[in-house]
Length: 164
Image (tube, rainbow, N blue to C red; front, side, top):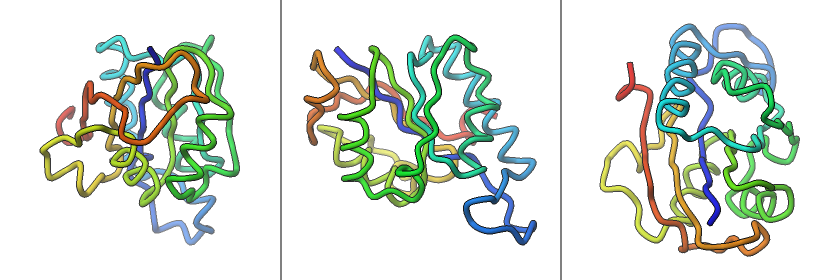
């Protein structure tokens, strides 16, 4: 079995006048990222590997999750504003270990979650996939290369609003 955690970055700050790639989190986003990290740890959802977009807001989200330092974090340019097909192909090629967290952007991350699940959660928040939205799904596979659409079993879905 393999477990995948798909997380949209926390709320970003549009007031800095920086490029989209360099946009940081705002205060609310920083609190949300910390709450998501607390939730992951309390639920025993600590990944073996984190695949993260190179954007400032995704990198900051990852850092504020405060995951154990022993976990590998790969920052990948191809995840910046990636479409669902690119997210899935990146997982097939780069994922390792039993549990992988992937932090990226909408609309690709939301679409990837919907495509990978057998059945999506009956929650309005899943359809919107707001900042910090996180889906946990399990796959009955031995190798990440065998990851296929429509085969993920939903284990959890949350948004920061439910945690703070």
